[in-house]
Amino acid sequence: MNTMTSTLKILARSAVVAAVALLYVPGLQAAPGAGLSPVVGEGAQGKHERHPHIRAAIHELREAGKEMKEAAHDFGGHREEALKATEGAIEQLKICMESAPKAGAGKAGKTAGAGAGLGKVVKTGGEGAGAVKAGAGEGERHPHIHAALRELHEAARELKEAAHDFGGHREDALKATDHAIEQLKKALEFDKK
Image (tube, rainbow, N blue to C red):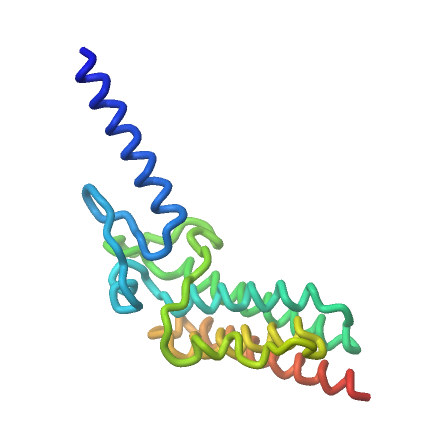
């Protein structure tokens, strides 16, 4: 009886450790069946995750929105216009993810909820990955606007790399992202006046 109880306790602890690892260790995903499987690079990620560029773009757009909300000034309405465009782009991409059928699902299969599973995407390198922090020098004037611009440029890059157009929604999201970029550029010009 004691041996069986000890074995059950060990198994329970192992399950808890595995669950915590899935939540807090980047690059780990639950493998079909039993055990954990490390995911290396974007190639392996593409095997387990559908539309990683769309998910990455959503993340970048959300980060840009946070930066815009933190900005101290409205810049003659340009910041607000850029924020609205960014939110519009996110909505278009949510539609993309909702309309994308789950792997192995029939025509009726849809992803659960607009925001389901749209967590933070960890960049693994490649073109533009190092550019996200570029230009973020100390004493930079309007650092939140510059950070938002970097995030928006990264989102645009991800959208251009996405494999599908999702009935025009990806293209609409890209147009909205480009509009947000233009508005933030105008915001910086407005500040110079």
